Amino acid sequence: MKYKGLVAGLLASFAVVTAAQADIKVGVISSNTGPVALIGIPQKNTIPLLPRELGGEKVQYIAYDDESDPSKSVTLVKKLITEDKVDAIIGPSSSPNAMAILDFIAEAKIPTLAPVGTIAIVLPMDEKRRWVFKTTQNDGLVAEKLVNHMVENGVKTLGFIGTGDTFGETWYGVIKDMVDDKGIKIVANERFKRPDTSVTGQALKVLAAKPDAVLIAAPGGPAVLPQATLVDMNYKGTIYQTHGAALNEFLKLGGKKVEGTILGGSVMLVPDDAPDSNPAKAVALKYINDYRKLNGGVPATFGGNMYDAGLLLERAVPEALKKAKPGTVEFREALRDALEGVKELPGTQGVYNMTPEDHSGFDERGVELITVKDGEFKLVQ
Image (cartoon, rainbow, N blue to C red; front, side):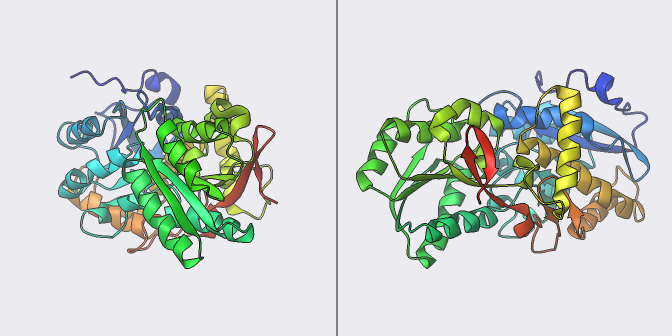
């Protein structure tokens, strides 16, 4: 089988050492092609910015493209485990793909840093999920920001349009619990598939319910379609988006149709607006500048999720090396334990404080309330 995602040019740009030299092996799976490519490409482009050494030991990154297909994510994970014999995995790019690999990483005891949105990858905590660490804000943190804004602005009824997969379903569950507690009623609940080119039927049902506001729960490029359709149908209420829409391509694809959007996102979207007291600001600016020098453009926050995985490994690997050597199950177990003990680590998205119960580790410092104004992301004032 040919794996399209082997990162071409990685040796030239990053000086990754050969397998014979490498003491630590890290597998990377991203969706560089297919419907999730807007998320996967900045993640792939971030690989050369990951640490060259971990705990003073050389590291090899073995990168593949799952083509946005969960079944290919599974195939690649099996390859990383049985053939490449990795010590850790970063990826995959999307929630369904990450959920598909849970059984395999748990059985092989491979610490996995998942740069995905859904909280279902780390909760409820069990024997499978204890091997996964999430490098994005939990849905609940983002949802709390959005719901508070709804309450402050008098929203009483809400329409919901989400992807018909783990991301959309998880978001519906999170938002329903929160709005119920705030006296906001969900009057429309619709789903669509990421590759869909039309959501006219779903949008018509939402419009018929006449909600005060609409929340769209979709990652990457697919987040634009429902909003553009509603605007074309002359919907005048507030449109909210999740952190899945936190990328510049959302602005480019949506144009004027996404003006006024309210979303929850990280400081990485608005680093110049954030106060210097925010511990994530300096990290975000360094990553953005390094990415720009390497790739000639500004990264999406999804790339930052990949970068943060490297920071977490950089913090945890030295602790694991005190207990075991790479290439052993003892090292992987020690690395898992060390990741669980990470405290006050600033990343591009916020500050990580991992615990046995919380494998995301973000607090309110990881979410800003953001709007789209004149084609740019701005802090809500």
